Image (cartoon, rainbow, N blue to C red):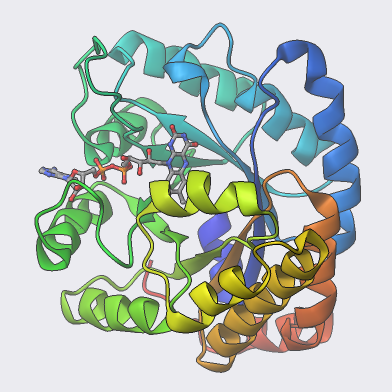
Length: 306
Ligand code: FAD
């Protein structure tokens, strides 16, 4: 299924993100994770692309293909370009097509200071153009966006202007960086809509359930930390079980508020932890569309001009 069509049919779309195991020898473990995640009835699961863009080591395509064909769950394969040549991208696109993958998230990838890069692509929009050129509309393209601005942009305004290059290059759905302050998301969405960005935007939410996540993930994302969040962290600083429960509650509170505000989609960063994802899903399930709601929606006039 083409992911943009999902956003025509239901609101919110509920999706999950996983990453390939660091070692290929651990590949089987990801399928145990996917089997457990299937309890969340996700509309799709996206699979990140890592290994420094190294195609030979990359298991994104294989995992995405198995999610789709063995578990019957729609999938999005991520693809980065900053350390790839056009020939690498072509090879990867051919693999996606051979695996019958229909949806790709076009990303630049992070730049590690001092790293020698291929430099055939500077930005995600150039990758989106290349995907369009190579596959003639056979792949749907998603892209990333940043409610609090990308760390390299000089302002949120200029980041949103740059985001328009992606949309012009064929990106039809956006997924946000994680955030903890819903107001930041609402302000960003207002600005993006005012700037003429009309594609669906899914809100990226990551439950913080361990102290180790705080430094690593939270600081890397650059997300601002609202008072309620920092109060939670201080309160459970020396209480891992309390933090686990409070972190799930915080994410659930964010998601319920987003859905009540009419968000297009929720994208849960699972960190390959199905127990946390299932707990979150169970606490928001009543707000997700049921099958019969989706059918009613199908009969309504389509909303998105994609
Ligand atoms: P870009 O869109 O290229 O933006 C990067 C910077 O350049 C921004 O400051 C932007 O304002 C500016 N810019 C954009 N276009 C132009 C232009 N045409 N001219 C001038 N300036 C421009 N990383 C991985 O390695 N693997 C993954 O699987 C992965 N998945 C992700 C999924 C999501 C939902 C998100 C939010 C991020 C993900 N990342 C992943 C991280 C991502 O690669 C980094 O955040 C990276 O630094 C930027 O990627 P981008 O695609 O947004 O880049």
